[in-house]
Length: 188
Image 1: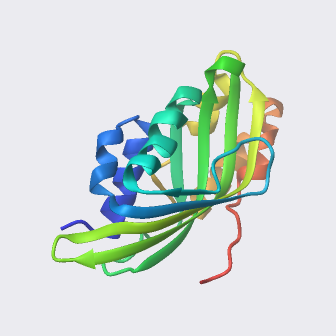
Image 2: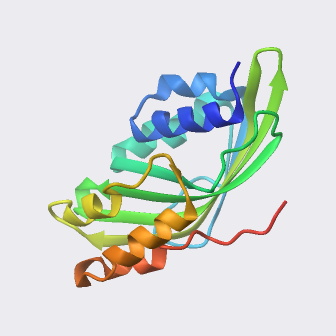
């Protein structure tokens, strides 16, 4: 039986490892994906409906622009097995090869789960992008430093904070200070 935690872990594998076939085991056929974006640094369609369209947006099209992606769920505990809804801050660290840039961003996910005899499936997903910085990184050194030794995909806020604050002491990694604390979100 699929649990919300298993679905979220599968989502990260599908997106970060470019395995679109995994999306069929995550979303309902009529699932809805929406976005709110607070930055001009990245764009997605405001609303996407249906499994195939979601798979194309989140994995296929995404992977044509970004590589070496790591998406972290910033929380102390994954959602419970019986959760119908989860709101989880995220951190993403990836490469935009064509521009030779590091992309680092933060926001939150909202997941709505429907449960049946086979377990949970995602019926709706909302992605809020608060910040998405682009930093020149020709050899991926900054990206590798930003990703190094972070627990993946579940990352406790205290671990993120201590790791990034320590790394930000180096001048070239000072930008990590802005990502050391997850986006504060209000409860649903």
